[in-house]
Image (cartoon, rainbow, N blue to C red; front, top):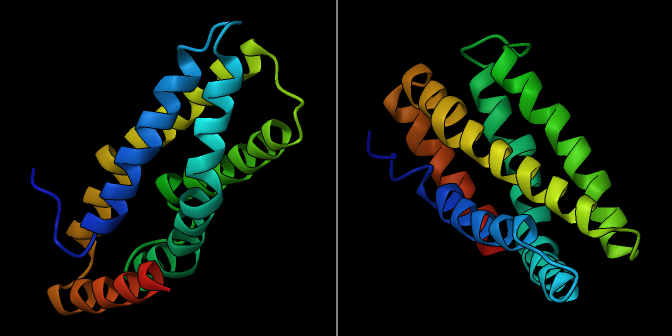
Length: 144
């Protein structure tokens, strides 16, 4: 199914996240530092902002129509906490190659969940005008 225009900016962020996740998952002892730097280059400007947009705009918009404790929402929030902690460890230099691989796999699985489960759920739950208003809010947040 084609992603709605309103959520497309978040899907574009996901593309960058999947690229960083792939580098982490493939990291070897020789290129672990480069994989770490590629992840941090994604995380600092985009990853943090992306998580905030989802938590501040996307999930509350869904909660106006759907259950706030929906398992897809709970999973996203729990994974955000875990990924933030792991990103902090990587930024602090506390990451072995195995830790980079684990972060890469968790980031990949998280993004796939959002693309395959959460976004279609939100698109099916919100009324068209609510989705359009959400898209405008997302565009403003992405621009700031």
